[in-house]
Image (cartoon, rainbow, N blue to C red):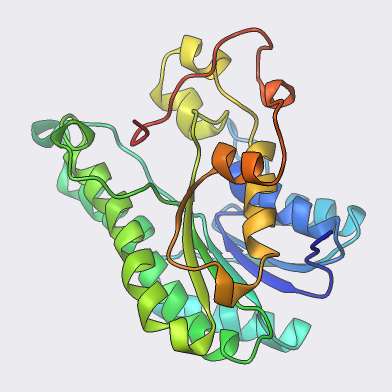
Length: 273
């Protein structure tokens, strides 16, 4: 079975949700993980900090480095990547997971929310990738994985939340361009998106309770990410993966164990036809 043992991952937004699950899945293989996120102190409404996740990573069998990082700060990104390489002796995988969401129509999206989504989603994906590429070139199996949707120019995916869609599609355009740009270096660049809504804070606070109940646990995204990141980088690049499709290709047929509420039909995520 493919493994991430001995690999080093740099994961943004890893203090909770999907980023945390990807970190823990890699840790179970014995990987080293840099948990790069803003949450240093406990949040009154959201569980998880970089320190609690670092402790979980180590308890799961991996090595951890907790890094307080605002992904909008170019200098801080460079310093965080340098710390990771110094601590673990190299870098094999970047997971651009950090994301900001505001499902608001154009007239109801203030400039500060627009700027936040552009800064955390597309700009940070570009800058984190830029900072990691020199180190990834030295890895035997380098990967960049962006948590972003398949590209589609259908108006329905823009209407109602133009700014958010632009920012997430910007991440996917990074996948499209960098996959080809870095192909000769053997650096895989792929996107991964959930086929259904995932039970994260973003879904809890932006959707009705019925959708949260019809969601799946973040573990399904972690398993799909693991399958992608453990695959040969020269053979797996430029793809827009859906979690369920990745796991079906690996032989999975029963997804009920990921259900928040067993028996409830899963709710399709945004950007999934």
